[in-house]
Length: 66
Image (cartoon, rainbow, N blue to C red; front, side, top):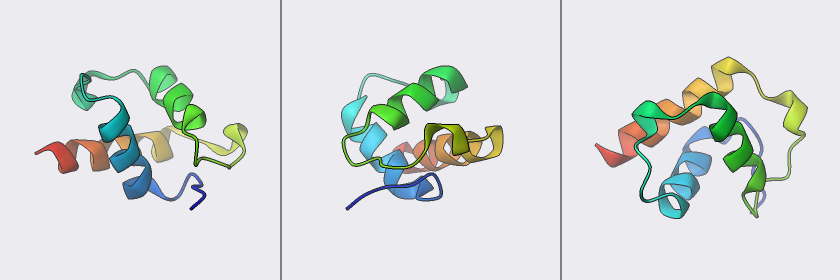
């Protein structure tokens, strides 16, 4: 399954599984952007992200761990 920026929940789940030692409440958006782009299943244009999308991914990640 290939992921794009709007697949926020699926991206959050993959990040949660690959970065188990990270508390998403304290993540910088620059790191989040890099980690999303580094996901093996991520196939969208890195330039299509925005602060709103990164925030949605962060919130989904926080919801998944709570």
